[in-house]
Image 1 (spheres, rainbow, N blue to C red):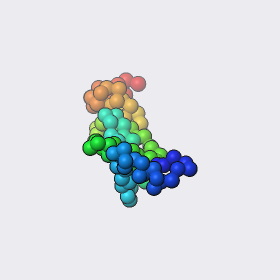
Image 2: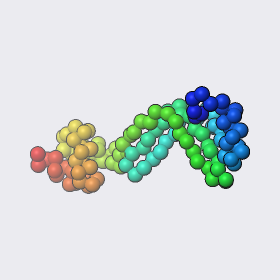
Image 3: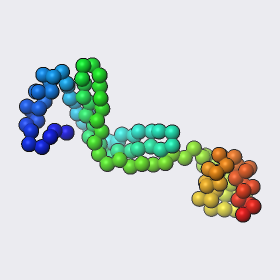
Image 4: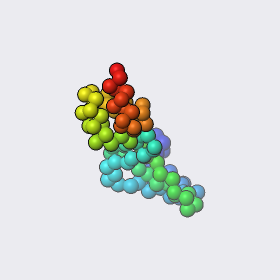
Length: 112
C-alpha cells in the first residue's frame, strides 16, 4: 500500500493533513466483481478504503481469477444431451449458438 522507503506513519500523517483518511479492512476472504458475462474473483485480497472529502474509493490488491458466467440452465444442458445424444460440451455450445433455444439446439445437433 505504501511506497517503498517511506515511513508509513509519516505518510499516513501527511495524508490526514490533506484530508485523506485511509482504512484497511481486515480479514477479507474474497471479493467478487460481477459483470454481465463474467465474474472476477480475488481470493484473500487486501482491501483499502480511501476517504477523500466524504467520497470513498475502494482499492483491491490481490490476484484476480476470471470466470465465465453461464446463463444456460443445468436442466437445459441435460435435456439437450439426452435428446441429441451428445456430450455436455456439445450441448452447451449448441445452446449458446441458439441463444438458449432448446429445440433449435437439439435440431442443430441432430443434423450433424
